[in-house]
Image (cartoon, rainbow, N blue to C red):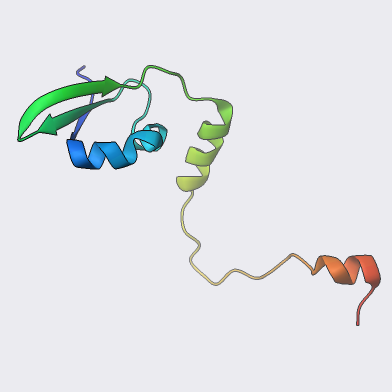
Length: 83
């Protein structure tokens, strides 16, 4: 199975270099093009930590069908009583 390769221009890559962990998953690669030709290739080789797995699982949750109701209370009313 071949790894997924995303493509991006040099100008885009320069601004998104610090966000590579959001753009790629472990094993995926990013090909940077300069004037339409392959210029560089970056591959994310690290593993996902537990925190990232939890965030991904939250993103994969289905959207609610109805309106959600609030369950949190104002912390000031808990500390100082209701006004």
